[in-house]
Image 1 (cartoon, helix red, strand yellow):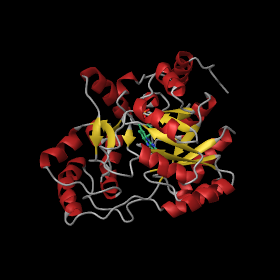
Image 2 (spheres, rainbow, N blue to C red):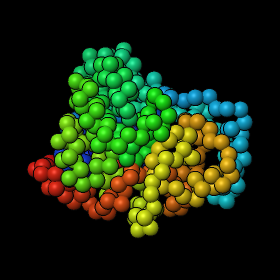
Image 3 (cartoon, rainbow, N blue to C red):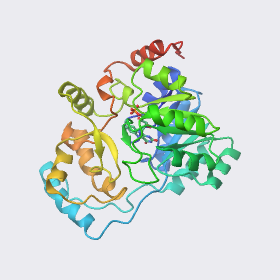
Length: 341
Ligand SMILES: Cc1cc2nc3c(=O)[nH]c(=O)nc-3n(C[C@H](O)[C@H](O)[C@H](O)COP(=O)(O)O)c2cc1C
């Protein structure tokens, strides 16, 4: 099993180390980290365990905003900032971490594995990483993307089913085109590619994991099933919102409101406010940068209307328990030996 990379605070080093100690491949979702923060977190993990680590980055995918869209969003955000006691909203410059600097740090840190989402990794970058002894993983949401990613020379591809929590990896066609259920996507990718396929999306039980492996997946990547673990770094208000949503039967949806890029999660006051205003949303990473202050406020105050409530379609099956309990139940139900290190 792979502990899914989950950027944005869900996976502090202690969480990753706990996953590794229970036999999962640990993944550092480093997309929002500066090179210095990446280094500090990797060193903290390496001080605790010698198990192999996957460092995950977002490939640059920004597009220019349509005229007036950023300004319109700043007008919408202004009263929310005022109510929260925050300084007026602005567009941070630069709006995202510098990918070239992050990649340079990744190469210095030399993890066993590097994984990339939101595009097709450049073949030259893949070759350079592989020459340094780093295994490279890409991600796809439909077969055309999978073939393109495989042709870049990567060692494995994540099949991200439409069920998966948070951002869609889609980079060809619309996000809606990329919503292929894992049970359809996985066999397509397994038969079309000659490299290992990692199943992701909606794997909530040992039975789900077993079925993915039987359908030809080399590994099963688990995100949402770990979100309510005691050690997981999402705010308690996010964990509580998942429990409340499950009790109310709320369904997940594709949400562009927080980052400008489609991501699966639960609607809340913030997303409904934008819907009601009917305004256009600036593209990733601009919207992500502009909503950062509100999300920070939500994290600080425990206001679930000011948090990006990412989760996959299976979120009602996420258990609130110590990570060890969650992983050992998944292992037992999948028929794996439990591995504690
Ligand atoms: C809170 C959260 C954050 C995520 N962040 C990332 C990320 O930074 N990089 C990435 O490749 N995938 C990210 N994902 C997607 C996971 O890697 C994986 O595809 C997904 O969690 C699997 O589906 P599941 O959530 O149904 O288990 C994230 C998922 C969640 C729930």
